[in-house]
Length: 182
Image (tube, rainbow, N blue to C red):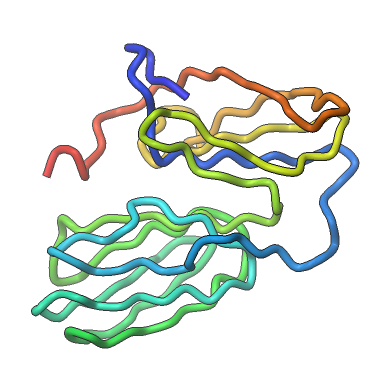
């Protein structure tokens, strides 16, 4: 994943939907479902979680935070809480959950709630690896919070070969990240 200028794009969410469908088993990813508050920032900038996941919001700062989202995917407000305290929110439906802090306007993060087990986030190199894909036609949706595309998404069709390994090079038109500007 690269920007129009050729620079790699980190934190893009790559979601693959095989046309044959996704397994009915509960989705579980190998990473922690957590958005920490540290140094007056949220970390990570983008988190992928499956529908139904409980996301923890620990505060490691010496100051209090009020974490909120008013998105269609999940609306919540975690009232003012301090250092070494944690709150938990269940993500009920797929979509984008932008996060903010009522106290610190520069704090910004995103949770992408997905309903497919075939999802990964791009690294600083712009690469993402989505594992264990079944062979056959699939739709790839790439989302990034700074994308200029409609809903921040680019959609492509691919055919996954029998060996389960497919490659897709994609360019995305992105605006400067608020995180990079602060």
